[in-house]
Picture 1 (cartoon, rainbow, N blue to C red):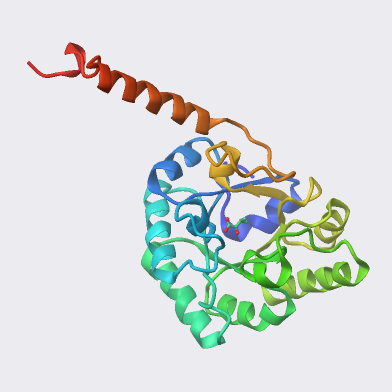
Picture 2 (spheres, protein in one colour):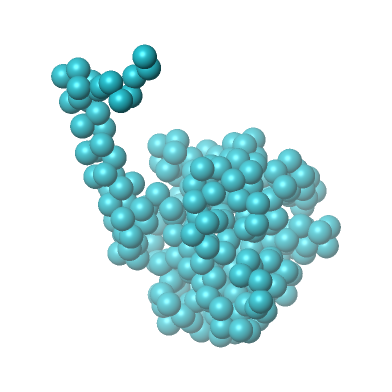
Length: 267
Ligand code: KIV
């Protein structure tokens, strides 16, 4: 692909070319600018923002207005990168009509490019309705955080019945017009098998390296959230410690009068 920026309609082509997709969550304009300049392919405004930023125990409390505020901020920071926005809990499950209205509002109010929603075969008619109305959709299978109360935060698809259901769900999402599928907490063999079945890319999180791309929660992979260390997470920095050290030094200097010195003061 000549253009280094991935475009949403070209995701299947990226897969055919063997180009692995790099996705990270992003909740604000500042990080969006940094991630775009680092060459991230896809930005996800995840409903995880209510856990990561809001300190809530699950994603269930995220609202449409919150998602729109953060998605618009991310879009302002990243002009060239496709931005995908999670549809929050109960914004798309009640009826197809509500799903279309809410997903449409997300794209209209934020200038973002696609929505992501959780669920398998049961969500296929909703995905079809969104895609038919011009709203690109990324699916999300495996551990689906909005169903935490049903599933618990555990690997999905270890038993043959669940694995068979995941295969069927993935095929149903593709048939309904989804342009990619996130696979979360799925055994790597099963995730690779599902990836091999589909023409659209799979994007894994805790699903091994047989997926067509990977996504991580930015704050986790930067080591800002140092209380969270599941097996699949690789920390590429230890920013919590950097922040603690910087703030400790600032506090010491304010208390001693060393800051502000003459260099940081006006005559
Ligand atoms: O909300 C989120 O951050 C997500 C990722 C974990 C894929 O859905």
